Length: 65
Image (tube, rainbow, N blue to C red):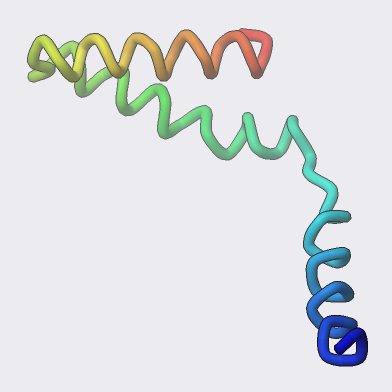
C-alpha cells in the first residue's frame, strides 16, 4: 500500500514547496486592476462597483499601494 502512495506523496510535496514572488505577482496584476478600475468608471453597474471596490482594496492592501 505504501509503495502505491509514495509517488502521490512526492508529487504533493513538490507542489507544496513552490515559491512565489509577491512583487512579480503584483506587477503582473497591476495593469489588470487598473483596467478594471477604468471599466468600472465607464460602465460599471452597482454590483460590479461593489465587487470591484473589494478587489482593488484587497490588491492595494496586499501590494502596498
